[in-house]
Length: 166
Image 1 (tube, one colour):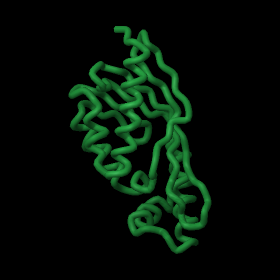
Image 2: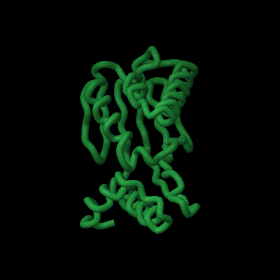
Image 3: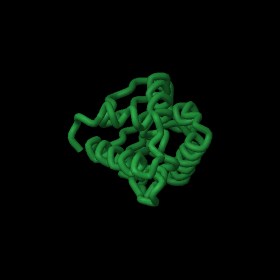
Image 4: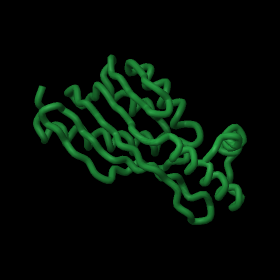
């Protein structure tokens, strides 16, 4: 089904505003509520989620734990809209907060959204190389530790991941 550009632009703007609100409040239920009850979500590091409630369980767990809880924003660098398919494809930046020494750490992903109407999405896929995110988060931890700012949850994560390459 084709959608108007105006509807897709508005829905995508709402999506981005909701991500900002979820990030600022820590309430990632807001994000999950943007999906249809039968939506699917493909996440390259965590797998495939079926249904809004499965998406909710994953996103609230992931974004309230390290490293997700240390990403203060998710700005979109660029996006394209396919009115005929109802798709929005964009590049999302995932910057980490300052580790305490002024260095910048982050990685990007490509997000593919399928629109379902009424400001709801039926599918999302986040495409990226999980090893790039892993290496970036480890580097952030090392900088935070050197600056005396490594949070306990990040320290636990780093100890678990220390044996892996990156």
